[in-house]
Amino acid sequence: MKKVLFLAMLSLVLVLAACGLGGNNDGDAESTESKEPKKESKEGSIVLNMSLPEGQGTKNDAGAQAFKLKLEELTNDELEVKIHYSNAFGGEREVYEMMGQNTLDLALQSSGPMGVFDEKMYMFDLPYLFKNSAHARAMLDGEVGDELAQVFEEAANVKILSWVENGFVVIGSTGKEIKTVEDLKGYKIRVQESEVQIDTWKAVGAIPTPMAWPEVYTSLQQGVIDGHDQALMVLETGGFDDIQDSVTILDARFVAAPISMSLDKFNSLSEEHQAALLEAAEYGKEQGRIRIDEMYASSKEYLGTEGGMEIIEFSDEEKQKYLDKVEGVYEKWSSTIGEDLIKKVQDAKSDY
Image 1 (cartoon, one colour):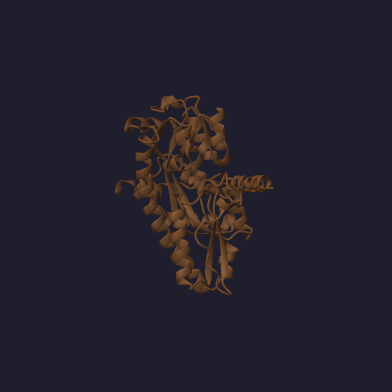
Image 2: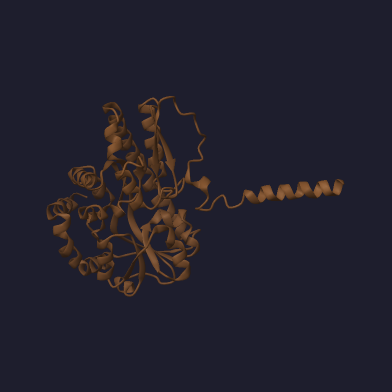
């Protein structure tokens, strides 16, 4: 009888242990929401759901957390933010669409899909338009950022509260090292749903493959693609050092990542709450940029040492070769994006 009871208890322990496995998988439901201790919502408070494409501790989480805490402080918890991670509501394009339809409140995510709503937003995909991060940030914090925010608001019914970022993207490569522009010939690279990105990679001889982000890791393992361009920090937080051999730093394409909100939801709130949202978003932007800079430096160090990846940096000569090859992209898209808008950015380069 004791033996039977012991076996039954042992079986129960094993079952409970098995249920705890897999907690770090991207598909784990628990991973889509914050694991911070949950507080009781204030009676009568408005809870705003916010989407992030990656998990906790990744590049934009600091900006989102700073925004959340500042907003709740400013409104005495009359507005509360619930952050959902790992594309819990769908891909980035779907999230913008949901905000436009007022079925989702907030997001902090890449500007990549914004051109689908209005082609002026493809400005971010023009290669070597921005000289460096200081130049890009100044443009987004001024007239250029205001104009793009207005364009997107009218096109998508989504309000840009502030411009955070993913920074300049790099190429994470499996097998083939990308040391020169010539190395890109025939290179199968994953791109976002952007015609400008597709045109750019074709111009330098690569084979661009539009692909949803969740498919990238497996596609690299299976050889469907050779590499992808993404923020440097994602190679570390996404575990790409396990399957990729090298990183090429181009500094060609800068990716914004706005804190954005359903325009209908924003307009439904009081003026005081609207002001608090804008103030909190500015704070989230500042803290988010600080964290982006910190993570870029630490990830570059990690990937080149513990990650075992070769860090390759394009010389000024290779950058110029790249830029020469993509002249046709500028010719094709300048009138669509806005020649005056592009000129404002280019004219300011000398200041940075």
